[in-house]
Image (cartoon, rainbow, N blue to C red):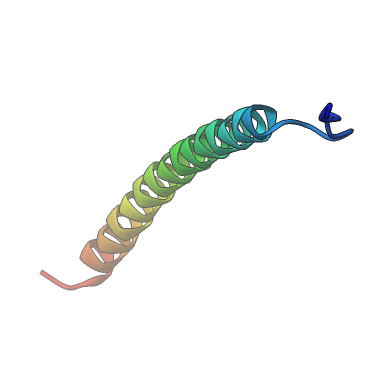
Length: 64
């Protein structure tokens, strides 16, 4: 009674592949989060500049 091995990957190989996919997803999510944080910081800085410019326009336009 000899057992034949399956043609596909073994359970250990499937688990290793799943771990590799999970690790890749973690890296991709971290990179996406970093990019989002950078975009948020840039937007926040631009909004601060815009509000300061509006404040300047309002201050110059109001009679003292």
